[in-house]
Image (cartoon, rainbow, N blue to C red; front, side):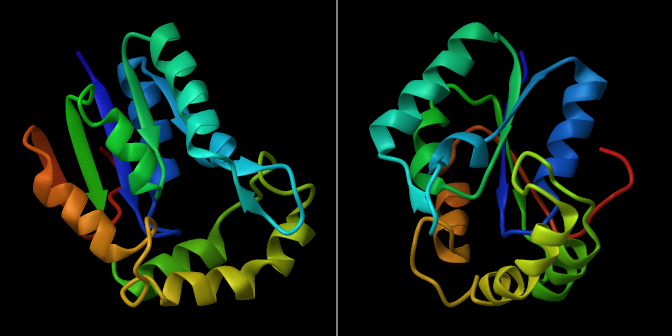
Length: 162
């Protein structure tokens, strides 16, 4: 049974890998960005309980899945059910390059132009990964990885295959 959690810095390739695994293995796929934020400007995190309810709906509706995101507070809710975790631990330069070259994400931005207008903020965010001390940080991700007792792997580069 495949129940996979993928996490890492913004631009590390989480979404790409999750979509690839979902297609190859016939898994349901969830991007945590879709449930972690309120529809507000500026962006504001949804209450943890509200995100948990949406995660539970997804997990209850799907026996096998791949879920990706950078939220260790949400990942921790899923870790008892996960069969495997994958830590996308790419260099900051690789993450910035991926973010710069990513195609338009219509589920996050109303246009490619809006996405590109947000790029400088995203690059700054990516650059702070090692320094931050929050649920999105390298430190939080590394601790989550270290404490997981099941099957786990760490990827330091993007592969063209899984």
